[in-house]
Amino acid sequence: MAYNILPSDYNEKNLNSFSSREFVIYMFGKEFSLEDLEILNDTNPSDYNLILDEYKETVKLLCSAGIITGRGNNKFEPKSNITRAEVATIITRLLDKTKRVGFDIK
Image (cartoon, rainbow, N blue to C red):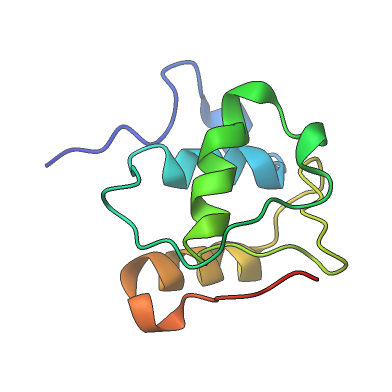
């Protein structure tokens, strides 16, 4: 099975630059649907409106499945650069369901 994770116009220059949290999460999550993931959370980050429209559903899906969380105070910070540690956490949670995070925002 082949996955087309990177868009066709993505090139080596892009690979050597920083990427936003919303973009990387979109790249990981675009191959999944509601049928693929168990929903643990029913909430959106408080800065959901700052996420590009084309990325919103994927971010919401991975957040709902406990694969991604915010950076505190229920903020996702979509335009911030993603860290290697965050990418490692996403990969771990995609591969191991027991590592996914359920949370309740009050």
